[in-house]
Length: 313
Ligand code: HMG
Ligand code: MG
Image (tube, rainbow, N blue to C red; front, side, top):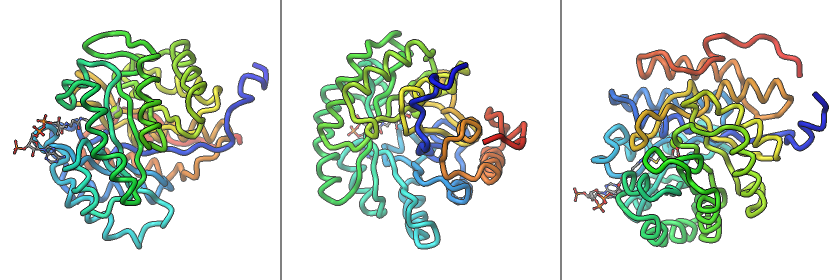
């Protein structure tokens, strides 16, 4: 194994934590607000700097996050007790969601759509074009209000209803989101279908069209390939990765989808590769255990079960 293989791997990457949102949106039992706040506190204590805490979507569509306003208000009310560098964000599908985010004092929103029509329709009840048009009510107004806006493109590695998705489609949508004012676009393997060669194709093309810091990877680990795909992204120079502590989660409109790559598994791998994240691995393991106790079941992440052995830098 020559050193050239990892020559482009960045010295530092940022991890965008999605467990309170992507993780909890698919839980069968509704987690009480106090449990969600405990999870957010544990994530902050573990050194995470970017945390997506909830969604300002329709409570009829996602009842698990119906307490979004109370949660966001509680988190933002304790803003002073958290490190000022921590950024809390929330999903926001429309003008109504933006109003709720503003009222709660949230500083960053995330808009989302799919690269495949059927998943998009099932997720937000609109065509892709109509969804992009509706972003006129969120992206620019949020930016005018001083908020940062992130964008997600789902089903990039495959759609549960339509199968393969041409990378050109996903990248064209990502470019539109960037042009509309999203500072970063997270490409989603919603159903965890990706394998390394496909990842090299998708991410390699995306890096040819977008600045490196405008690109993130959001890899669900349904088939155990998330870390392999992330290594490919690292080799290509990607610096932003989404993750969910314990591997909590899934997408309610992608049947059978498992959670995002477990944050502790990603952080362990990055630490072992000498890549800085600012994460305290021991405290992250505590956060994964807190997540298990909050949802009342074992979670699929591996490192929080196996423990951290001492690592060579
Ligand atoms: P709709 O039914 O077409 O919208 O839903 P509508 O405008 O006709 O409104 C229907 C009802 O919802 C109305 O209430 C609205 O007021 C209300 P009613 O009159 O029936 O009482 N409503 C709202 N309430 C609160 N907040 C709002 C809001 N908007 C409307 N913001 C809509 C359209 C987009 C709202 C709906 O489809 C929705 O909420 N979808 C969210 C789906 C979702 O959250 N999916 C999971 C997140 S995406 C994901 O997990 C993928 C990702 O992780 C990346 C990856 O893995 O690939 C990001
Ligand atoms: Mg997701």
